[in-house]
Image (cartoon, rainbow, N blue to C red; front, side, top):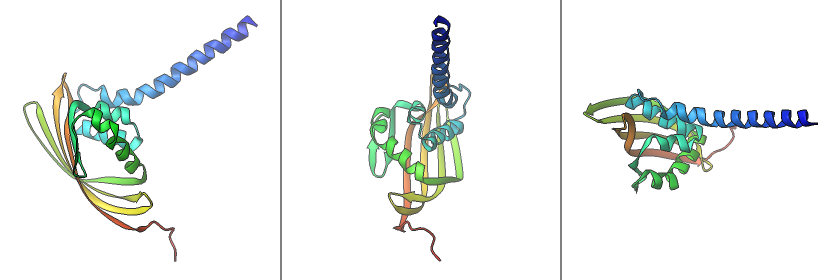
Length: 167
């Protein structure tokens, strides 16, 4: 009986360690690369939102990051995590976004990225077609590029209620 219990405990510990590793590895791969370029940081941020990984997305923002969206301002990473990040994840779950163009430049430890996206999908029961202009300012924090400011300007066209294809 002792051997059975030992085997069971060992297996449980191994499974718990595996679960923790599977949870940590994606977040670490998004935030731990000291050599990630500003564009790679932005792509990792957007990928984290698309995956629904709020923790990984937030880890790529500076603590004092400001996010302007829909005429509102989140004045810190904590403010953004409190509401808008969750809404952005919900929107990303039901829509797709395609990068149309990107320009970027730098001045010392400040880097800017200007991106245009086209998107479509269904949100809150309505078809959505639109475009988004994204302005991102990144700065180096402890040798890593982090997002200090985001501004999204979106032109969405909400169409009629989403309906199954009918002929």
